[in-house]
Length: 137
Image (cartoon, rainbow, N blue to C red; front, side, top):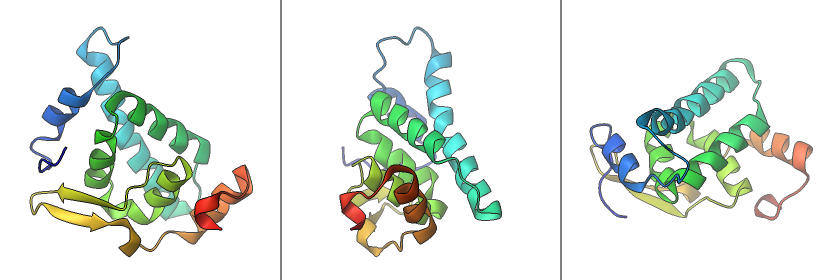
């Protein structure tokens, strides 16, 4: 999937890649899409107060990947571009962090995850809650 994703077409692509055999109407589709906003809200709260609900973020991410597959990565990088330093440790934790994501936004830019400085507090929170994991050792 190498098409350019931006705000004008993200819902169309999301519908194209949506796979939920238990979905009976568009309400469930939009409920799953709202998880992006929920994660953004959790990250915004973290930036403001230093408080983050780690398990809730992980749960939302897992559901997104379960219903949108690999396309979830493009949506996350598009919608959470201001929070990549917080997002990437979570993606590493659930083993979903790519080396790069291409064709993001109107400019069609490529984001290399190795160029993002990860938030050390989030890394330590994940370590404290779930123990060490290989990507950060």
